[in-house]
Length: 376
Image 1 (tube, one colour):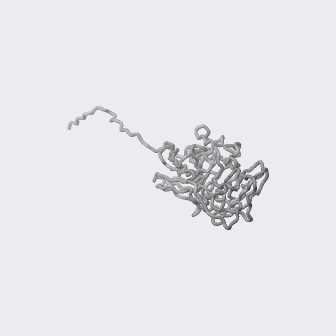
Image 2 (tube, rainbow, N blue to C red; image 1 turned 90 degrees about the horizontal axis):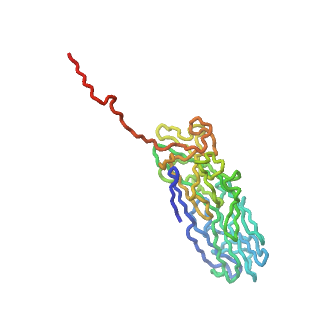
Image 3 (spheres, rainbow, N blue to C red; image 1 turned 30 degrees about the vertical axis):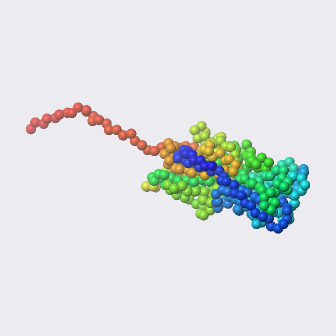
């Protein structure tokens, strides 16, 4: 699924869901008829921050509950030839089992699992540091018995789904009269935690942590990049990729028209920028103070943080959309940033619309011809 949307200041936003499921089948190692899995995941785009795929899912954790008790809990299943088995092996009991499986991220901070007869869930708190955020996948299979293990070598198929939302930010500038340099990116006022429930397959964020004083901001500073007319990913530092893995949630966008300084904690996207003219190096933004300052744009409705979706947001500076072409001063960063001697520019348009003229020439002051005769 792909969509393209044009927004303020020429911002374009491409929304891409996960592509088709990749199926792996294989035999198990040896003649054991223990519990083994054939695992499947969606196949997203690869990145420096690694998206989990069927091919790179080398191990996962699994629990089984049946007959009113936990049969096994948080057991590691490792990929053999291409089927995942535990060591030592667990065998099928006489009663059905519910299976709960998930990949165990390298950064286990902010990843808490609850597994008992009544609750089977994972509470996730994405790391504040972008480099430590990881893709998380999970699978659930209810009421399975040995005869359900019909894949090669009696393995039970598991389909893992991505249960976070991925966001990547690109940018470009279309006006050669201005130089735009970017060295940071931000998403403000999101819930910074959520709980995934295996039986429903959904992640839910606490309502009181969305668009509230307890919301979380995710911001990173990177190596400065000068924008060109070609879109480039601004969340990169050197050769490292950058993308957010965030909690799926419904948000309310910052309303720049009715809530200039964002006291309602609306969600917005920001870039830390330095904008100058290309001739004379005139400082456009920030006009005063530091070399860089945050600009902001309201998060559009299309960026709605749906579970399992990847969003690629492309910000197009000077797109001549009637909004000035450079976004707005960060609504939560007060100060005189545009040089107008006002103490708080928060939420204001960074640069006005295109300079245009409606030219006319006045008539001669005296519309009638005056004849002058000089006698010598």
